[in-house]
Length: 125
Image (cartoon, rainbow, N blue to C red; front, side, top):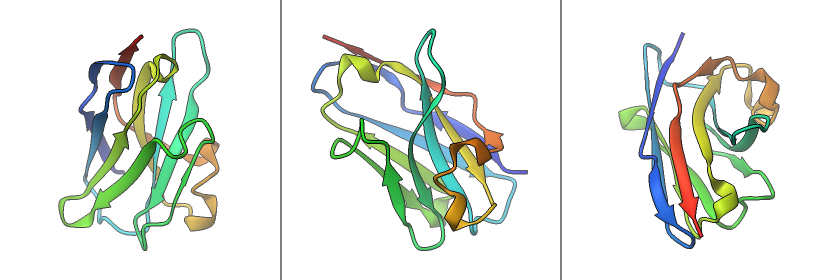
């Protein structure tokens, strides 16, 4: 099973940017759906974006479209989430997750079965 470690969280002011990183290990880096999720205090965990490691197809939640970009570096087994124009409502714990159930299921947030420990993002107004 793949092991995932997130990094890059922090505190920024509204309008600022952060780049989250997710390092994957323990597997052959092929045919994974890699997702980014977030969970604010008292709220459910929501899917934010995903990328399919074969070919790089992506999709985003409506709340982050145009502001967040997910990318990958297959040579390094890394996935990134570039977050621009951050808003206070983006404040949450952000998690990297993965599954190998196929590209057609990358957008099925409930299918993700390997998780990192999370990294905190705090956006102040």
